[in-house]
Length: 519
Image (cartoon, one colour):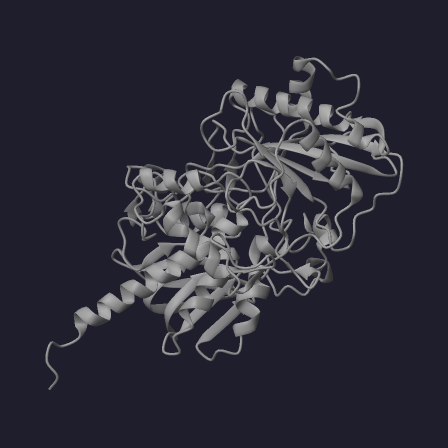
């Protein structure tokens, strides 16, 4: 049986970074296992084709259980099944979140995760088109660029927001997050720059790195409470491989808790009820699921505004505070683009544009559980979106603001009829019904293996799984609370910081094992 120093499960945004950083040491061997295939689908590279990737063969295509506060609707939960993970199918928006997000993580008992601590890791990854600064780096692998040809109508959205009194923000990842501006994208030379393109493909030549695609990990292997390897299915055959140092689980907010539970790590009573032997009783595994949700206003337009092929379709944005949230980080994020992001039941026009409002702060929490003990079965996902009436009312107010913006003078040359919600839907009650009927996830699931020191924490502040040895979780599932904005950049940061934590621990072990005096 082949041994590796480290086995990384999942070649997504965090896993690609960890594999890159650990193999910088030529004496360190790494096996990277990815259930998906190489990113050969042509549409992956074309920013304007990102919608076509949802539900395709490079998407796990998960679906939630019937959501009790969305009239029993099942929510489509897209996750990348390909090298690069969700960074290969997402909308490429580079948003780090708010500094308060990370300071809050530290306040929850996670030293070393404040904004001051994590900013260097954001900068380390980044090759920022606008140049180096206090907030940005230029020596990293990940290309972060301005939109090449934003649509005129996207500029009109910015103009409308500024006319309403919102300040222009040239950098949502800079001095402040609030205000209106254009999103930057993880795009290089007009093509998607996924975590695989940035961190993995350039190092495939390293002899100490082995990458196996089409490899579904079925179980973590233990001797007592020490993780000693993994079992995986590849080309219809089961394989086992052992690890010298650590297994690093980077399978994402749905599949990392699933694999832990399949392997005997989770709520003991629930595992025993499914006939799974308990390795570690951690009731927090699969709990604390958080995700952003959005609702849209779609407007017909009177002239052709087809986005450029280099556009992700979501070009401009606005961060602001609702009336109930004036002191903390922004709790509303707006998206705007020259596309029709239509809700079910609405008929598209020839041309249109969309504004969407998303809750960055909300009160609902969901869970991920095992559907069965078959590793091929998808997990059971419950989001509990819009459990709080306060959250619903914030979205209602967001829709009203979008309507105001779209009726402003800035859109006079473009505005046709409102497609959705439609002019007949005006009262708060009607808008609430529209939201519950049509809202969508922003595909930002996090938190199901949360980092912390409380009884529901799954990993410690160095991302080591409690109750076992030789196992860490390194992906968006470790977030104790969701960030204010998109989650890809924070997940890459988590990979960067984790790699340093792993290296530091190995160095300290080497020093501890070194004889005091040479023979």
